[in-house]
Image (cartoon, rainbow, N blue to C red; front, side, top):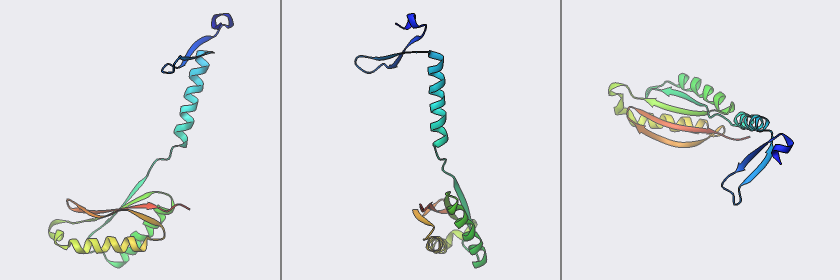
Length: 134
């Protein structure tokens, strides 16, 4: 049938019983398939993670400044990764870092949900935030 019409016989799903075939122009079939894949790729959302760095002795003004940036990032739909970096002997002030991150989470309560509570990884204490929908 395909030869009579001057088209190609294309196997659509070989695993089906019996296998499914279609009589189509193979080049057009490939073109449509690429087009469909491209559309699906465009609809995908890329997850953007913005990082905000604190020190254990971060001052109130700096805290407010970074808070403002975090709010902007969350409103844009990006995830925020806030971390306290302990340099040298400042690792002694782990509690300060944790308090700072929890205060940060409290301030961002209406903009984000907490994905990961403060967790110490090496010299960093990390906390992740997801933007709220709506």
